[in-house]
Amino acid sequence: MRIFHIATLADWEAARASGAYTTSTRGTTLADEGFIHASRADQWEAVRAAFYADVTEPLVLLEID
Image (cartoon, rainbow, N blue to C red; front, side, top):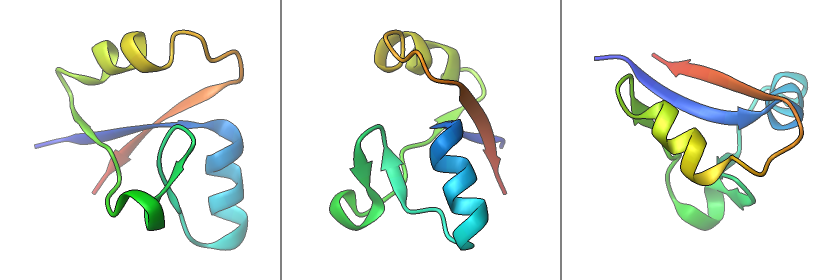
């Protein structure tokens, strides 16, 4: 099963620079939430529409392996 996570480009670039991804979801850290929000292939577009529609900065879709 393919699993996806929507991230801001800024969060993803920070993770690549630091070597660790610490964002759970928009505005919430992994430490605060305890898990990373993720979606199946048939869910991510609806998640983007519901929770990221007002985001003006670039987003990236990450596939979790």
